[in-house]
Each structure stands twice: as structure tokens, then as C-alpha cells.
Amino acid sequence: MIAGVLGSVVVAAAPSARIDTVPTVIPQPVEMTAEAGKVGFCLAEGIKVHYRVSRSEEGRAAIRALMAAGITNVLPEENEGELEVLVEPGHGKEWYALSVTPEGVRIRVSELGALHLAAQTLAQSILTDAEGKPALPCMEVVDEPQLGYRGLMLDPCRHPLTVEQTKKMLRIMAHYKLNRLHWHLTDDQGWRIEIKKYPKLSEVGGRRDETPLLTDHEQGDGTPTPLFYYTQEEIREVVEYAHSLGITVIPEIEIPGHASACIAAYPELGNTDVEGYAPRVATTWGVLPYTMAPKEETFRFIADVMAEVLPLFPRAEFIHIGGDEAPRDQWEKSPFAQAYMAQHGLTNPGQIQHHFTHRVAEMLAPHGRRIIGWDEIMMDGSVPPTAVVMAWRSWVKPDAALTAADRGHDVILSPDSHFYFNFAQGNIPADPAYTPHGNPEAVQDWRHVYSYDPLPATYTEAQRARIIGLQANCWSESIQHGPKLEYQVVPRICALAEIAWTPAAKKCTADEFLQRIRAHYPWFRKMNINFRHEDGTPDSQLRK
Ligand code: ACM
Image 1 (cartoon, rainbow, N blue to C red):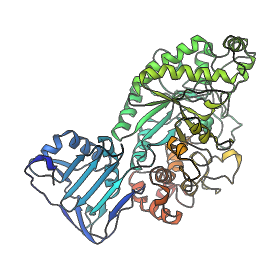
Image 2: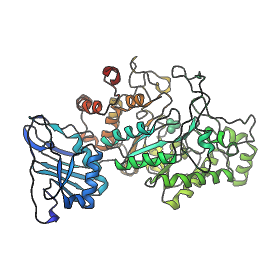
Image 3: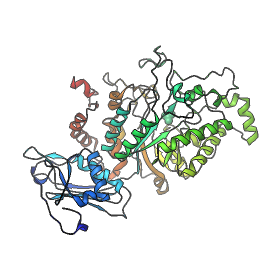
Image 4: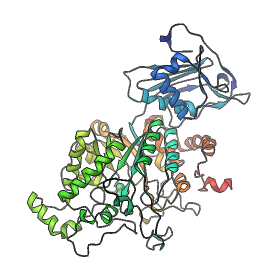
């Protein structure tokens, strides 16, 4: 089968033997029919693509998306074709439809970007036929997500994560149709992105004297860390790799708090006039007092940093500026900050944070970028209307997400009650993770994630319209390497992906979802993912 627009059609056929199972696709497509016990499309010889399709823009994009999804034997042919690609504008941005018959595969998308989503559904649908060959069953899919922003946050500040490990997480994200990597690149314990105009950010901010022990966060390990930061070349490499999988990378530069590493590198950016001022890259976890000072010099610094950051993330419609946990203590004590408040008629030091938020939003707007901030950006005053609020503080009353939505902000749901993937998944010796709020009862296993409804009926239509997505966060205080990260993420990511994508009415029971997750174990193994078994055992232990 080839695109109808191409005139004379030579129809190839690649029927499989009988296929006795049906695919288990996560997240569940909105509409999907596939029948067991029939012949399907045989993939043993690959998918032949008519040369005219392979040279068209949509054909090339489809081939790239299929290969990125792991369907690598897609073969341009002189005069046969089994792949049809149709662009049908008018649907939602991420809408796609699939039709598989013994003769071929038809992909319809509203925009070329959605080819990644179609390709991942196809990749998850590959079964084995009665002759033991790889095959797609005959199936029809019409699908689109309920939320457009489906994210995961990685934190290479507390513990490093190599480029290769980051790419592996991107492959896992793409498989489950997550489309945003939020890259938390700066924090008190490390500055991880090269900024050429300010080399000390990575030279000084890229290492620290010691790290708290995993077993006792109050105790240091006494060991200086090796230097770790991403060069601009490495950042570009990750951003392009993510793009090849249909994922946009959003950098986070923390402003004005969580800035100890930045201020240790350039002490003049901090509140130098407070007693005992001695900034250093933090060697403890938690909230630290070092905030940026509201000086013109600091705003110039931020502008300079953004001037290097923006070109590295050319497709990021949002730039995350942090904004969480910025203590006001130093501003209260600093004569300079107090004079700044008097000069600008500020009555509360929290309003200094608003000046930062507004100034940075204004810097980015001419470049077509909007800011995202953690929900504290709403404290103590006004926020630029275009700011997106990432709501994480689940204990705050009234609800931070709804407050933001009611004020007209777009909202990304990231509550620490459900989506903090650094938190433990069980109170069992096999699960050595961090326990949230020191409460060993508060575990967040995949069932807990799956129980979350991002768009409950109790929200008004206007509130629902403001919720643009959701995101899980992998803070890395206790995630010291890639295999531990995989343990924390997989299979929780499956539950996250499904609640972000699939309307609640189409969700299944937890027991059914467990069976669906289990159907993905072979893929986890094929990808060498150290996933968490139901009893808490890391898969790597079973593979020894
Ligand atoms: C956060 O967990 N401090 C956003």
C-alpha cells in the first residue's frame, strides 16, 4: 500500500502467520481494536517503503520516527510500498490514527510531530506470530492525549547523571509517550551547565567538598566529588537526541533560591552584606539561606546566562526558572535588600522574588519563551500572567494548582503526594529509597500514581482548561546512579503516562494494570532497565 496521492499503486503484501495474542499498549489508546487468532502484517522482512513515499517529507519523518521507536528495518524500495503516511490537519496536535492490515500499515497524523506517537504504538504492538516471526496484528487505532504536557524531571545536581544515562531515560519516556524532559540543571549542591561567559559556574559550582551519606543525611561522607557538568556540546547532543524521539527538553535555572553553587562561584551575586556571608557549594540537603541579591549586576548575570541557554534549547517554549524554597532571611538582614525594598515601595521581602520573576519573564518574552515556576512564585504578590505554575506543594491550602488556575495561569500538576519518584515505593528492605517527609507510611508505588485523576469532576470547566499537563520529579539526593534512577522510575512511569494520556473513564483497575505492566517486562529486560518488581526486588538482582 502506498500513499493514494502517488498515482499507480503496486500493492505489496506481507501477511504474517496467525497471531494469537493482542498488544498491550501503555498508555491505553482512546480507541483501539485488535483481534487475536488472525493473520496480521509480517515484520520479518521489514516494512517496504515506496521510494516516492520515502522521499516525501512525511515519509521521511515517518521512517525516522519508526526507527527512533525501535522499528529499524524500514526499507526504501524501487516500486513497492507497504507504508502509507497521510497528514490530516484539523485534529488536535497529537492526534494520530493507525490501520494495520496484512498488506500494510497506514499512519494518519494531524502534524508530523505526532508520527512519534504513532510509531511508539506500533513498536509496542509487535507480537510473535505462529511461526515465531515478529508481526503486527490487524488493528485500528484512533488516539490523542488528554494532556499536552507529559513530563519527567531529572536532577543531575545532587548526583550526576551521564549523557548516556540521560539518553536511556529519554528512550523510556518516549516509549510511554512522555514529551517533556524538565532538566533541573542548577541547585545548591551543583551547577551543571557550562556557561562560557561565567566559567566558574561549572568550575567552582560543578564540584563540592562532600555529600551526605545515603544512610544518614545529617552526616557527610568526607569525600570531595569529581568535577561534573555538561558542556554546551553535550547539552546540544541531549536536546537533539530528545528531539529525535519527539521530546522537548526544558532547562531549569533556579532563581532566586537554590543558588548556593552559583553564588559560591560568583559571590558578588549574593547578599554580601549579611553577617557571616561565606557562600560555598552546599554539602547538605534541604533549603539553604543563600539567595540572589536584587542588584542590577545579578539581573545582568541572569540575562547573560539566558543568552547562552536559549540557543541551546531552541524548541523549548518554556524555560523553568525554579522559584521554589527561596528563603527571605538574607533579604530581611541585608541593608542593600532593605534599601531596594524601600526604593521600590515593597512591604514584604517576598516581593523581591516577584521582581526576579517579572524581570526574567520580561527578558524571555521577546524570544518567544514563557517561564515556568514552582508554585511558590505565586506567594506574596503578582506573577506575570503568561507564567506557567508547576504545582508541587500538595499540603498547601487552598490547593496551589487550583489557585493558579483560578488566577488564569496554565498549570502543570506535579504534587509531591503522588509524583515524587524519588520517594519510596514500599516499606520493605528491598526498597532502600528515601521516605517522604520522614513518614514511612507515605509510599508512592505505581498504584498510588495510577489512582490520581488530573481532571476530576469537582474541577470547573475553566479550571480543567488551565491544566496543561503533569510531571513526575526524580530528585536525586538518594538516587546516586542510573540503575537506581531506573528502579525509581520503572514501572511508575507507566502509571504516570496512562493518567496523563488516557481519560479516567478509559482507565482499568489496578489489578488489570498490573497485568499490563507485566506484559512490558520483556521490553524492560530488552532495554536492560533495572525495573522494580512487585515485591520491591530490583531486576538487576535477578539477572546476576
Ligand atoms: C521542590 O520539590 N522543591 C519543587
